[in-house]
Length: 142
Picture 1 (cartoon, rainbow, N blue to C red):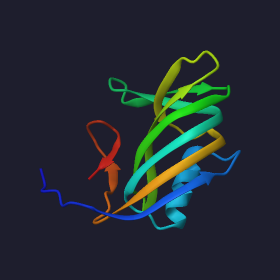
Picture 2 (cartoon, rainbow, N blue to C red):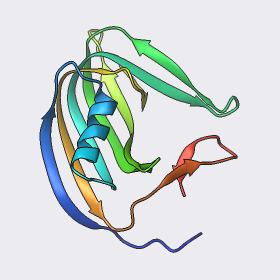
Picture 3 (cartoon, rainbow, N blue to C red):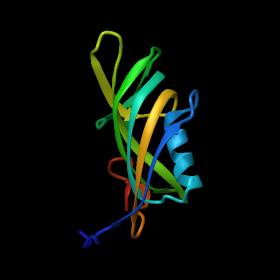
Picture 4 (spheres, rainbow, N blue to C red):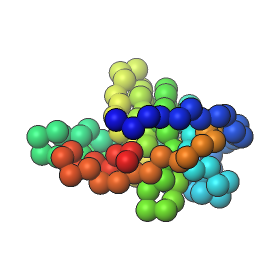
């Protein structure tokens, strides 16, 4: 394994995401617009609907679950790295509906923001770059 170099903290952003937009796309667009190439992300709030995924290791593909109801976004945690020469956000979420039961998984495109407050901490150093891993079929840090 290659020796890892430490990262320094760069700019810190706290902001509200736009209602009605796609959550994953909005985070990636923010990072692109602000040239955040490496960092950590955290979000709380609520969504109008959600799409989450579970990676089936045997099939080597994501199984998607679409939740067509209002949900509290209890936690979103993730990171920012580069894929295809653009900042990409990899995030996992925990959500809760009217029954207070939690559901979670890999955040997929298709999650519509109701109201979300985001925290992005830029990390300064050599950005992590995602490339397709032949064994897992996942885009992993090279």
